[in-house]
Image 1 (cartoon, rainbow over the protein chains, first blue to last red):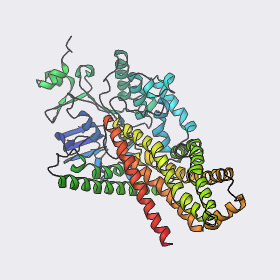
Image 2 (spheres, chains in turn green, red):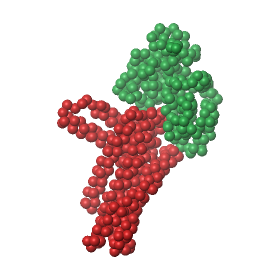
Image 3 (tube, helix red, strand yellow):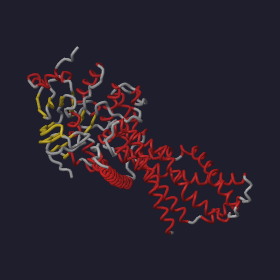
Image 4 (cartoon, each protein chain N blue to C red):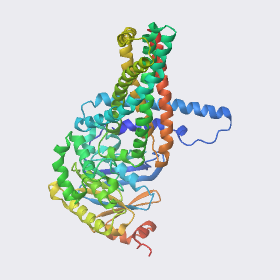
Amino acid sequence: MSETTFNPAVIEMRGASIGAMRDASLVVVEDVHWTVQPGEFWVVAGQQYSGKTDLLMHAAGLMTPGCGTCRVFGCESGALGEAQLADRLRVGFVFAGGKLFTRLTLAENVALPLRYQKDLTPEEAGRAVEVLLELLEITSFANFLPANVAANWRQRAALARALVLRPELLLLDNPLGGLGVRHRHWLMQFLEQLAAGHDFFSGRPMTIAVTTDDLRAWENPRRRFAVLEDRAFSVLGSWNDVKASGGRVVKELLAEPAG
Amino acid sequence: MRGNLAKTLELANTEVFRRAAASKSYTDLVGQKLFRALLTMQGLGAFALITLGVILNKMGVAANVIHPRIRQEISRAGVAMLPMFLFVALALGFLVVGQTVSVLAKVGATDYLGTTMVVVIVRELGPLLTAMLVLARVGTAHVIELGTARALGEVEALEALGIDPVHYLIVPRVIGMSLGIFSLTIYLILGALGSGYIFAFLQDVPLTPGDYLKQIAGSLTWLDFALLALKTVMFGFFIAIVTCYHGLAQPLRLEDVSRVAVRAVTQGIIVCVLVDAVFIVLYLLT
C-alpha cells in the first residue's frame, strides 16, 4: 500500500537498483541516490543503452526498483496502483519518439487520457484539446494519423498528450532525438516556459526531468545535471560542475560531433 | 492496472518461454513441449481470470471511451462479416442440408430430418464453423494489432497515462467477439436451414416447408437454445483471450508478430475443439 509522507521531494531514490524494461531481472543502474525537489529542472545524460529510459520509467512509478526505494510525490513507486491513480496522474511522461497510438489521429491521441480519466465524450474534451494543440502549434495536423506526420510534430503531439492532464512533474525521454534545429529550439524554449510557470498551467512552475545523449544542447546555469556511467548514477550539479567534470562519458557527451 | 498485465507477464516471462537450449534427446523435447504447454495453459487461465475481473470491476468506468470501442468490435466481429456469412450459409445449406434432406427422402427416413438438422447444424457445425471463421478473420487481426502495439511501446504509453491496457485493449475485444460469434451463429444456422430447404425443393424432395419447420422445431428443446447461447459466447470469449494473450501478454519485437499470430490461431482452434468437446459431453448427459 502507499506510504504517503510529508517529504516535499517530487522524486526520491535511495539505493535504488534500476532494472531493464525488457527484463526486470537485468540491473542496468545500481545504487541510485537521487532527489528531485519541486520546480527543479534536471538533465540526466548518458550514452545509448546506459539505462536512461529505465531510470525515467522508475522515476515515473511505471517500474519498481529491484532493491532500495523510489518515491514519487512521497508514494512508493511500487504502490502506484488503482488506488493511487491521482498521484500517478501528477506525472506526465513523454517517451522517446512519442509512442503515439498509431490508429488514433493526433487530436484523438491528445484527447484520450482526458476522455478516459474524466469519462468525457469527444465533444466535451474538444475545447481543452484544441487549446493545447494551438499552444503546441499542431492544430493543422490535428486530424492526421501519426504515420502521416513528421517526427517533429509527433513529438509535439506526445508532449501535448502528456500535458493534457496538467501534471506537476514532466519526464521526457531524449526529447531532442531526431528533431530538426527549428523544433529543438522551439522545444527548449517551451520547456523553459513550463519550468518558469506557463500561463496555461496558471503560472505554476513545473518540475522537469529529461534524459539526453547530447549535453551541449542543455546548457543553462539554472538546470541540475546528472550522468549515467558504468552502471552508476552520479549527480554532477550545475552547468559549471559539468564543464569542470573530468569524466570520460561527460567529455564524450560534450564533444562536438565529428564532421 | 499495471498489475493486471504484470501478473500475466510474470507467468509468460519464465525461462521456459525464453529460447531454450537445444534438446539432448527426444524425451527432453517432449518434456519441454509438455511443460511449455502447461505454462501456456496457466498463463491463459490467469489472463482469462484477470480479464473477467476487469470486466466486472470496471463495468461503468470511462464508458464514453470504452462503449464506442465495444460497438466497434461488435461491428468488426459481427456486422462486417455478414456478407461472408451469407455466402457460407448458402454453401452449408447446399453441401449439408440439401444433400441430407435428399438422401433421407430417398430412403424414406424424412421423420429423422429434424433431429439430424438440429444435431448437425444447430449444435455442431453452426457454432464451430462460425468460431473458426471469426478466429481466422478477426482473431489473427487481434494478434497482429496487439502484437504491433506491444512492440511499438503503446502498452507502456497507456500505463504512463494511467489507462489500464486490459480495460482499454482487451475488454472491448472480448465482449465484441463473444456477441459477434453469438449473432453470426444464429444467422448462419437460419441461413443454412433456409437455403438447405431451397436446394432440397429444387431436387423435388416431397417435403412441404410447414413439415420441414415442424420437424426442426419439434427436435429443438429449451436446452438447445441455452447451450447454443452459452457455447457461442464461450467460443468468442476464449478465442479473444487466446489471441489477445499472445498479442499483448508477452514483450514482442516486430519480427515476432507473424510467428505469434500462427501460434495463437493454432491454440485458438485447439481451445474451440476442447470447448466443443465439453458441450458434447453436456448434450450426452442431458
